[in-house]
Length: 199
Image (cartoon, rainbow, N blue to C red):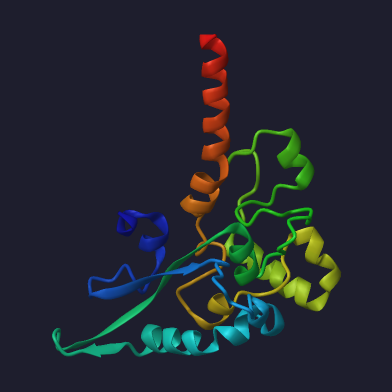
């Protein structure tokens, strides 16, 4: 389970023996007959749109909620945000256009390195909390560095919560990356190959 994972164990709020609430948020750009679309987020930004939620999350993390059935105050925090790549990049403060020199939110590999070498944990430098925080700070001082680092600003959740960070809080999303991404493409190629070989 995720309780056994590295990020859960490293989270000083969650690794306590006391009962804690872990939240997973889901972000997707799904619209059904919505004439406004995502214009609110584009117009105001995630920081403004998420302000009421972030306020409640800060309260949960710092003060907690009294649960009558437990007879105790329980704290909690956001463990992860599941989103498609565009949503994750937008909310986490990375560039959304994927045209940056360093476009990956997991590693510091350049566009050239990713295109011409095998990408793996040993081949590219992993993004760390410290590196990311430094990049955000530098981009705020000099916005021209944004394309170099692939960072446009800070993440509202990282700014407000003590136990959440943009680098560790946005895992790959199985629905978008696998089920709607590479799996149908690979499955189609495999089936085409099998059909071709059977003839």
